[in-house]
Length: 292
Ligand SMILES: C[S@@+](CC[C@H](N)C(=O)[O-])C[C@H]1O[C@@H](n2cnc3c(N)ncnc32)[C@H](O)[C@@H]1O
Image (cartoon, helix red, strand yellow):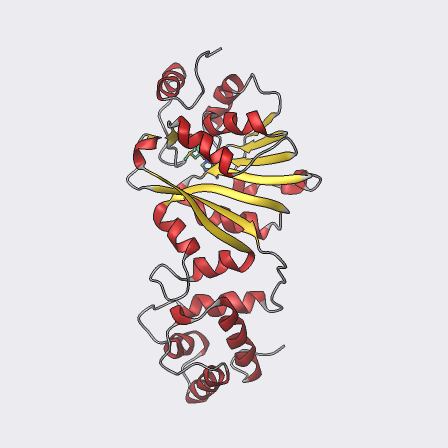
């Protein structure tokens, strides 16, 4: 048994990696947190309590898991790297409320969480798949209370970005469609072992109050994708590119913009989510998109 201070202390992390002859795997995006203040702060930000079931992504050697296990009713942690499973069995042995599952999170079946009274998702994410993980979690329609996750600072800025800013785009709109986003903590690269080439931020996502799914969700996000395909082009040109460059289409697209109250030189970054919903309805009305 590896005894000693909390798992995430620099000395204990180094001791655990040494004992198991482990090197952080780049392929799995392994950068272990070694700042106990940050680890504790993440658990505090997520406001974990005994009623909570916590879904953790990528427990690594268990540093964040330990902080979560101290406060939660139960922690279920998905770790893809099978080399870390015996490590976790040892480091987390003192906690009988933790279950580690050796699985790719992007293939996880979340039906186990359907009975959870209160589900909170917490992670120091593997950065190479930050957005696929967020889309997977949101796509699975999990009834979560919050998602509190560390990611690259620049990605965090894109998630929180507001209309008109340079970070604003497809990702901001897709995430803000379902959730409210706030950046809660900035974390320097020195808090990790090994230290990554980027700084990080902890982001909190909470379900949007009164969320109602837009009836043409798929078409809406296809429109948004098209609108940001070439950021320097006008919205009209991006839409012509997407829906076909015929004179007839141009007239219909321009009519749809006019009907939505926009001038014809507007760019995609000036439209809010509600603006896109309105525009989509008009593109359907004007037969740019088939109104089946
Ligand atoms: C940035 S490290 C965080 C480790 C630990 N939670 C910490 O804070 O020190 C990301 C973790 O996610 C794991 N991981 C990478 N890809 C994964 C996937 N597809 N599914 C589950 N875990 C994954 C890595 O093996 C690694 O343990």
